[in-house]
Image (cartoon, rainbow, N blue to C red; front, side, top):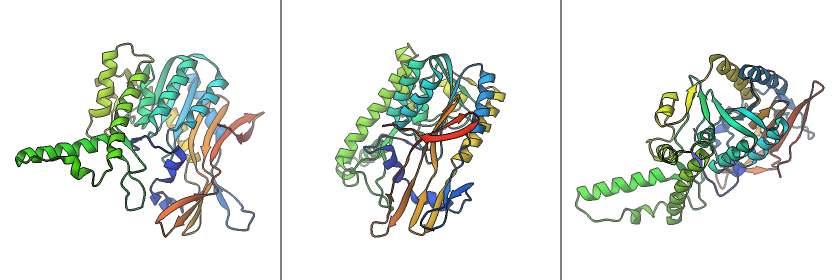
Length: 371
């Protein structure tokens, strides 16, 4: 699970900073490859399976008797600002609707982007239903809060939305990356310190020692971002929930009511905290799993290792799809391991969004410009 993070840098920089352990899958076979002009080994590329996904999407729309939009993240993808532009492209293609279903599968990402996506969806649909067959965590839970109804399958889970922050002054881990710091972690350290001080009858200031490990500006930034998370939940719920006190209770529980960010909020727990959640139809759930399998095939890691220090990545990270159109974020960059700094750096980054459409039965893939 990815903790809800608010970075000062862009989503792509956040992906760069992820643990390099993801390259343990470097020997995974790839379904396709394209030769390099310089004669080096072929570069692996992912399959674009839009024909298959469109077939399943048509079956789902027939079953639901309403339009369906899908939003899917790979394990290395995340909710980001550019997703809003991709979603806008899909919504423009299908037009305004009385009722829309949104399939969400994501580990989370940027909560402010979730609010922007809900705001966009609400301009195109009067009633929104979110379908959750699997994980819908962190910022994805925020996205689900914008729905009039959440339908959850047997394996579905939401999560807490307590925040963490990767700051330019955050502590550095053993891989020389900045680590995220959460409000809950800081508060627990202070509470434990204060309890121990009372027990020993000693007056002490916990922050004096804490600042030796966490910069004061980081502590202040984390406190501010925690307030932002609560505000985001309240704003998203206000699109359909008129009871302000109920919305406040839900926001407070999701932000500070669980001892772990990864605590699974199942259908039963979602109902307990006040969300309008119902079981997902078995046939619809099965079709969503079929669709997820195709997306997972598209999103499998497509990395080519030239040697121990040079790798090229072509993986698909995010997919947004509606009737007749699929938009996806595809990585296209070289990784170089800089040994003197003990970290990976990116070169020749051509990562961007692509648009796949079926024109007279043939797949046409083009660049989808988001800026």
